[in-house]
Structures are given as structure tokens and as C-alpha cells.
Length: 400
View 1 (tube, rainbow, N blue to C red):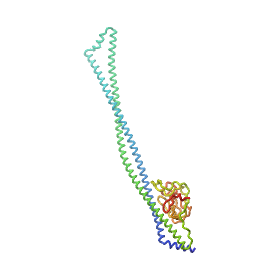
View 2: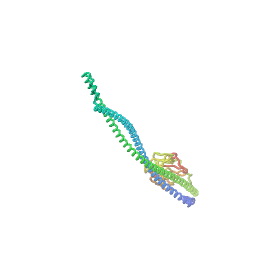
View 3: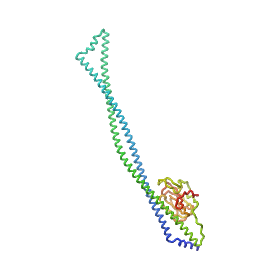
View 4: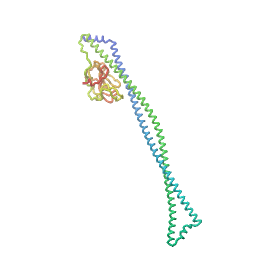
């Protein structure tokens, strides 16, 4: 009992007030760094939400612009079709007018010839037909000549009627083509107006797409900046954890020296555990190594393994040691880090609850928290990592 008192006194001597102050100062620095990391993480989430909205907005505007361009292409195609139809109609109309002119000239010639014969018959009598009849050599010949003359007269009348009918038919075709041309002109005018309106809309939407793209690029730049800031804050926190581990090593060494000076037996220096226990049972959903980050994006080192487990599942300490971090830590969410000596520390992230506090000694398998999805997590799971002298290693090489 006396030796224990002496060891305690010696420990106080070997760990002067300044060392205790340094320990508290380091804890404060870790806590402040966690708060900075949490603030940076919240800001990063805000910027990511802005980036997401900007991407959705830019995508929607681009879709609208694509639809407008599609409509313009359709109207342009329709204008081309109308122009082709107008060209064909104009050719038909030109040819019909040629035919109509020819028919009109033919009818005019027949009318002129008929008028001349009527004038001649009026002024001189139609002696041609009488002479033909008077030259008949018999009654039968007279009848035949009379029938011939009658057929000639009917043929002339039929020819005139036929020419006039043709003229009327061609005129009807011309009228129909003129009507078709008027309709096509109207369609062309309407399509041109529609094309102009769509062109103005496309120009407006192009400007909106450009503005949205600029907004998206600016949001992406901000996200990148905050990701880099968050990464730096995480690196600073890892450095503080390494310093905390070094402090723990000094504390253990001071305890060892105090026990030696008090004459108490001292156990051999413990190195890092050769193996650690699984903190929870479950399949590995993401292994250690480089990967595309599911929430931050980009190709990054996944400095641990993700173990699938239900929300609230109890997490056990992977090995005995002392808790050096137990607080919200940005992307890691609620986090616990345990120092196990020999330069080894384990890390537990995304917890829904924390059951232990900084400075508390825990044993292998002891409940330290519960599975959750705080921080950057797409669902409930435990991110489990192992640090050897501050550097992440694959936990599968140590888990048993």
C-alpha cells in the first residue's frame, strides 16, 4: 500500500503541473479542431446542396434548350417541305398557264374562223356548201353530199365546244393551283413566324444555360475549396491524434518510471496488439484502399473498412486501451479513437451514440458506442480504421 502511495507521489513529481496543463491544452486543441472540422463539414454540406441544385437547374435548362432546338429543327424541316411543295406547285402552275394560253389561242382561232364564215355567209351567202350540193349528179349523190356537209358543220361545232371545255378545265386547274399556292404561302409565313419565335426562345434559353453553367462551375469551385479545407482539417485532427498518442506514451513511460522508483514490479513494455477483435459483426461493404468517394466524390483513400450493421448495434473496443477522442468529427460523424500502445490506435466513425469519454480505459470487447450514419454516410454502418504511428493501414491484416 505504501509503495503504491509512493508511486502515486512520484508520478505527480514526474508529471509536473506543466505537463498536466499541456495535456489539457492538447485536449482543448483536439476539441477545437473537431469543432472547426464540424463547421467546415456543415459548410461543405451546404455548398454540396447548392451544387446539386445548380446541376439540377443547369440540366433542366439544357433539356428545355434541347427541346427548343428540336422544335426548331422540326419547323425548319416543315419550312423546307413547304418550300419544296411551293416550288412543285409553281412549276405545275407555270405549265398549266402555258396549256391554258395554248387552249385560249386555239379557241380564239376557231372563233375567228367561225366568225369569218358567218360574215362571209351573211355578205355573200354560203355558196360553198350550195355549190357542193348543186354539183350532185343524182339524188343519192345529193343526199350523201348533204350528210357530208352536215357532218362538217357538226364537227366544227364539236371542235369549238371541245376547245372551250379544255379551256374551262385548264382554267379550273389554274384556279386550284393558285388556291394551293395561297395556302402554302400562308403556311410558310406561319412557319417562319414560329421559327423566329423559337429562335428567340432558344437564344434566351441559351443565355440561361450559360448562366446556370457558370453558377454550377462556381458552386463546384466552392465545393472543391471546402473539400480541400475539410481534408486539411481532417489532416490537422489526425496530427493532433498522433500528438495525443505520443502524450499517452509519455504518460505510460512516466507511470513505469514511478513504479520502478517506488520499488514495485514493472510489467514488460507492451507493444502494439498483434491482432484486434471485430468491433461488430457484418459484411464488409467497402474495403481499405483508393476508391471513388460515394458522397465527397473524387478518387480518394478509404482509410479503413466499412462494416454493414443495423442502426444501434453495439460496438465493442477492438483491443484494450485508452480513449483519446470521443466527439463529433466532421465527415467521420460521431467518432471514437482508442490508443492501444506501441503506436497503434483504432478509429470508429459514424456512431449514433458514444458510451465512453476521453481518458477512459477500456478493455477488449467493451461496449463503446452504437452503429449509426452520422457525418458522410449513405446508410448505417461502422467505419473501422487502424493507425500505426499515425498512418492508416488495412485493418484486415490485424482483425482476428
